[in-house]
Length: 615
Image (cartoon, rainbow, N blue to C red; front, side, top):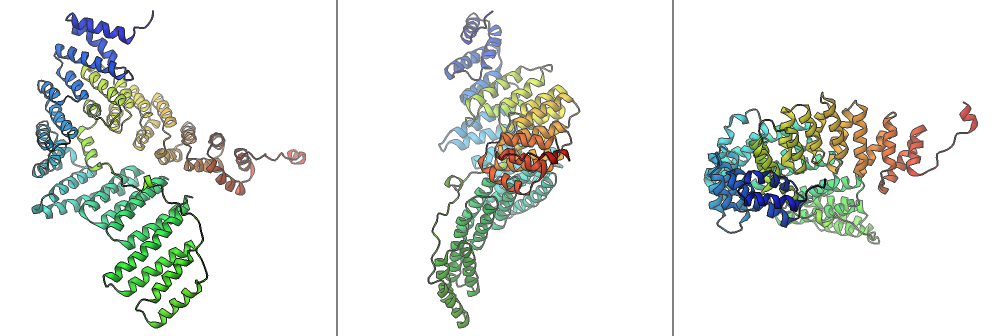
């Protein structure tokens, strides 16, 4: 029997609607809406028919979410208002409509949204909407309500975020500056404590979030100390995770902000540190950073002279510039800098010494050559996500599948394919009864391929039986975030064998660059050969220099069969930049390790002589 085409299904569904049988049309239309890859005209036609079907059946929420997907917010509000406890959905319609508009009439919509959120007992959402509307006193009231929420007890990270948001609201109004600073200081203290705890538990990605918020605190409060603490700790975490381009991007951002604030000494030190790091990880930007360090030290000297600062500071800045230029062999600029030193109002003996040194460089020239800089796209201003808002929204929704997916279906920043999947997930959940398998829900969350899906999956894993936990692991194979691997690691140690197998399958799929550090951590902590093998296979697909170096380390240090598995991955690696590193290791290797490295490099393996074989 031939399968029924989409056109035939749609024709049958519309015939049922025409004949006044919406209950018969509903399952057919639901089947069509599950086809997220359908052409847009077809999918929109199915939505319009489904909208009519749900209206006739009196399913207000179903119809409301279809209208939300279409961006018809006023209609959606009217429909949700007829649904039981529809305050949150009505509020979200106002909220989303405000974001879609570019005119000055957005504030009233946000106020309406905030009032609806407050009525729905969602104070985080209410506070954010009031703040967006500029109603800061109302926003503060909502943030204080969040701070007093019983569920926030024992959660210092969320407490810190709430204090941070509350402090920002206070700073918006001049009469409450002291309160704002007090809340921000407490937020800073909590964030520093929580970041330390996260790092101690090996959750560096969560420690990064804390430092990123400190960075934002420094930007908004004007505190260069907070700014520096945030940037330098974020850079440190990127280095530990072997994310070298991210580290250099943050160096660039920090350098730009330091120069804007005329923090020349800090800026020059940043350049020097970035130069050392670039050289250490084999990136060709070290000479460019050294050149910029010399230029910045010269600017520091000029700024100190203009402000009438101590002459010793000017002298020290110029000598620091000489040190950077000396590393480059830039003799012309070294001579010019010593001549500048000789003109300072110093003791004649020291001025004569600088003139003598400058004369030694008279006949020398600077070496020609390019000084490659970090690519321009990595030096542009970057908008960092508002973690202090997003993580509190996640806390308040607490993994509610419908509310999380409904935020995705209405957000045009997501691809249409993802929005359609989110829509279908919501519609299925609205039809769900207690017997509906949670396994399907978990798999559908994975297909969203979106970060907000992680909290609902964590909740399912924590409360579900083995088949549900297995589906969670399968879903995680589609979610390319470091946080996914935390939950995968729990699955690897699950008591149910089917959950362990699904977790192993997820490990083999999660080979994106940010996964390097959590994968290697899993490898080092694992005692199960299957886990170690899955990690090595994932690293083999990662095709990054860091992954290749780790595989070489495993080949050298781990006994068989692990060493042999690492070699097999390296033979398929295909990254030319790794070959010089492999040659360096070959120079120190002996025995079977040397033979395996030769095989990777394509060097013939020596054949033992007959006498050696006899021995």
